[in-house]
Image 1: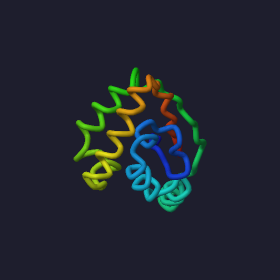
Image 2: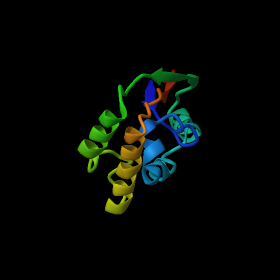
Image 3: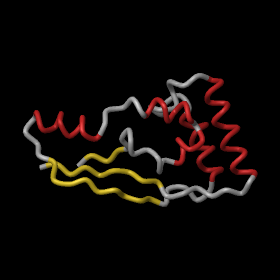
Image 4: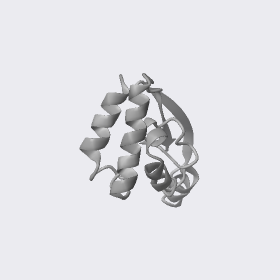
Length: 113
């Protein structure tokens, strides 16, 4: 099983709603089809893909705290510039000030046999 977010299927990732530069990084990751093809070359067959909805974040402040803590280690946040990161924080802080709530996180579970 592979649990991941794939390009073209990132609209339900809260972090990417606020950090457009990180979303652009994630858009360059291998697609679901590319990952399945790579595993097929090793003899695996795609059994199914299940979209999992997680209530990951209780509030947007937790998303902000995560972004700050993961700035230099998260695979989508680490490559962006400091200015792009600051812009994402401003976007997120604006959403917090408006009282917005995080949506569920959509993640794919790919089952291979």
